Image (cartoon, rainbow over all chains, first blue to last red; front, side, top):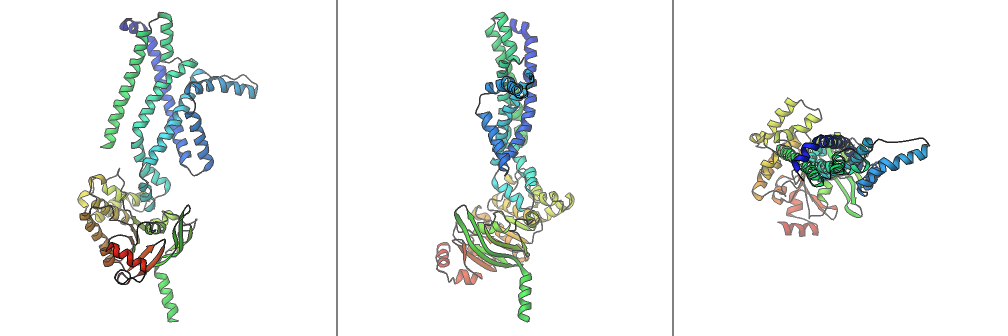
Length: 222
Length: 254
């Protein structure tokens, strides 16, 4: 039950796991931001096909647990492809994990973007258009700068959720922090100390993230 | 011969020609066929009860609302045509809103400079010079570097007028410009508008300020139930209304 003894012994494993957790989170969030922008644009466009695709995607992701999504990308889809093409098809754990996290966060981020754009007063677009600015210019110069300020708190919140959700990927075998911790506990039975450290790591990262976001917000508002 | 000539001179002077304008929101018919000819330099005040379609009429003139019937010509060019280059047409139709709608993330000066610079009509330096001139004209040059939220409502509305004027429009539309203002700030905005009218700007003003309308309008449109019920000089429409609805409206607001 000695916290520091466990830390001393297990820190190389913890570091490995944490570095994987941080890497997959950052990479997936970068992809998710791109997905978020495109799905949001599709969703607010007047093109019924694009709009439907966006809505379907969001409905699918929001309506299913991430654990199911992970199993789907790692086991189900490869089997489907194998069945259709008749050739051996496998996807590696990291890629499946990345797709899962990015697709998941992308759906939520697109909704955050849409909500923020819609939260900008309607009169702003009208004022910009009445000056003769095009729709695209009005978006770029008037709507988006305001929407970014509005979306920042929700976006950081989504970053935190994605960071924590990455532990779910332990279930398909991604060597992130939870996976490493489980292996360590299996060998030493040090459940309490190990999971306490895991919790502390997450708390530390999330606290730093929150502080950074608060500083950024304050600077943007001044 | 002379009559024909007069007619053609008049035609040339028609700045805004509204023909049978209709607008429906779903099943709700707001405008039921508006006809109007507004000549260059004319100041039109549009009055009428709330929900009568005054603002919708105004917003159709720069196509913030799409007409569902009829046609509007500005300088002889159809703006209701689907193929009309509305961005270009809007560049010379300024608009001032009830809620000011200044851009909160830019300073006062940047608000005024933005459109001419973005549309590449002026260099940054020229746009800034023009912006300072306009701000001076509305009495706010000392607020150039302030953010809109630091200004009072009356000041914000004057900046909004300067912002519209920065595009050097030849038509200005005002949508209840003083309705969101505290009473003591109404005057400062009306004074700026009075000056504009005196300089010969073509103006269409939706307003509840009856005294102001009487003062500055060349013609008054009384709109009710989606049509122009009565129109004429302020003396005709406001002092001596013929239509029963105009009489009843004026008796309530005067």
